[in-house]
Image (cartoon, rainbow, N blue to C red; front, side, top):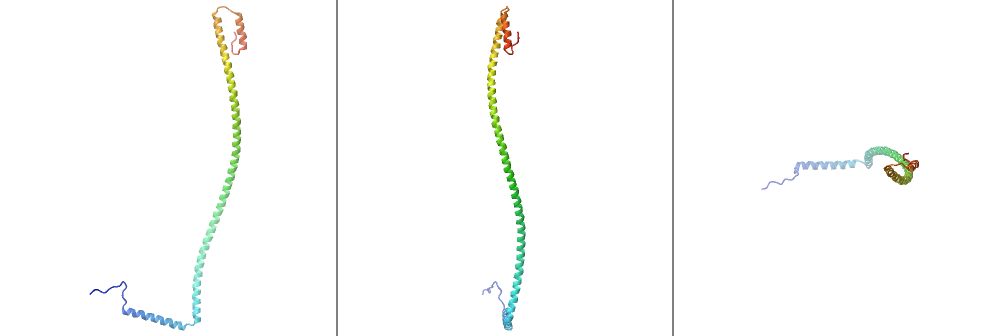
Length: 188
């Protein structure tokens, strides 16, 4: 034959079953007897006492929760108050910085405008000076070319006169007159 089936729970013995049944019966009888012995007023007083005890426990729990919440609110209020003060200080600093920057922008704008006016004036003066220099240079080149040609002509005339071996009083007198009227020509 096969071995008996075993359950995962041990099978209660008859003795254990009887003890459990007796305990349940005694508890039921005791509860019924105590219920019969207690008056309805005593039951109401007992229920009110239980409700008072529960209410006091709940009140203590709520007071602890409220105290924790109140402390958190107080801490957050202080922290946010400091953050607001820091934010207001930062706002004041930034407003002062913006006002200074606006003032600097206006001042530098005026300085730039003055410098642009001065640049325009200087460029106009430079253009006039360049024009004057060019005209003076053109005149210098013209005079220099004239003098150069005159000196070359005189050198050739001196060579021609020197090649002839006799004196000419009119030539010497002409050279003396020219040395007085032509700058840079040596006197003879």
